[in-house]
Image (cartoon, rainbow, N blue to C red):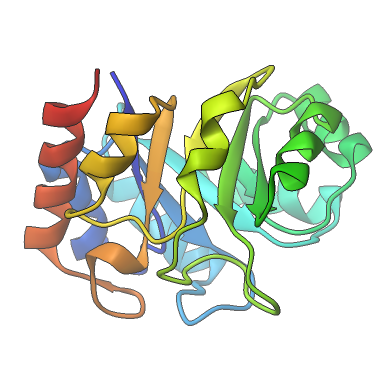
Length: 207
């Protein structure tokens, strides 16, 4: 079964809505972003969620110490590194018991080669746009995935929504899909109907 992560959660209401829709994971952005949320707020949201939904913190070039400290304080299950973090940072965080997702920005097939450098628990593939890290609403060229052989689990992100996720899953079956802006009313505010639609389409389309 393809797993679904709803990222850019900023409120208890949106987190609970994603949980009720059947999402497998929710993501909280700690880096500069219109969806940025404070650690105390994430801690409060996490306390309202059940144990079966995975809570993921998204960081950009934060120090391993800061990532560890925030993950422990908030009660996160996993962390997503969305910057230029080196393979050594991934190894260090995993050595401390954290589940680590390493995000890579994709524009050409050469970008996919970078996945071989990391021993992360999963690789997240996002769209490469200058000066933007996630939440772009734009997808990369999915045909690049046809010959992509990953050494670990793959999560696809970038421009997904309830309409086109079926197209992706018709071409490639990842471990998971990650959506943020594609299910929003405005940056950081989710549309419950679109979240529900996205989850249903993934469940009905995954091979």
